[in-house]
Amino acid sequence: MTAALPCSNKKASCLDLVPPSNSPRRREGMITFLSRNSTRLLVTKPRTPTARDLQVPGRQLRGVHFALELLSQQNRVLAGIEIAKEERITAKGKDVLVIGGGDTGSDCIGTAHRQGCKSVTQIEIMPKPVEGPDDPQNPWPNYPRTLKTTSSHEEGCTRRWNINTLEFLGKDGHLTGVRVQEIEWQPNPAGGRPIMVEKGQPEVIKAELCLLAMGFLKPEQPAHPENVFVCGDAANGASLVVRAMADGRHTAARVHAFLSK
Image (cartoon, rainbow, N blue to C red; front, side, top):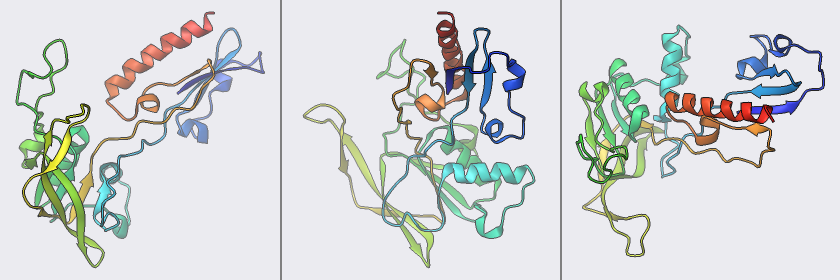
């Protein structure tokens, strides 16, 4: 997020306004700059994105985690930070279920293999994409929505589509499996979103670790004054770095235009 606010100290220099590297504001990614016309620019990164949750029975069981809980903790472990045994999330020796696709789901699969899992299964509620390279539903110049297979998938992963999660199952507070239902999507006679219809009987996928990789919620934006600019993940929710870079460049141009008035 970038905000432009009137500056009360017209003699301050740009460097004077940059907080020290160990200050709370700098650690949060917040840096203040001063323009030539004494307008203060506040540049800050968004806080941790809100992951999409799956509120079904058994969600509170130990072994059910958001994907970023595993991934961020593993980054800290690789950096040499010690994690208490009772807080450690690990796939070692476990059957792992990843709910959701995308890059985050792929990262979970690769990390599970690095940690020594017994098996990995990935399920998605949406239908399997076409294998491409062409996508009949999205012809050029639209971006083709084709099946993406990463190096993590190639290491070993059972992939299934059109699977809805019904319940997390457990024993003594720990996850033991996930009850799921195969579904199919049928056209909605009234138009709009297709209708989800159950197909066959529910089944249980054995799992001691389940990782929720279903994307992130788009932040709700309050009404901002004209001198406040929001961009990147703060505006659109968590996405790719290249999109954040492009949005940052676009927002920089908007800030420049605002200051040039």
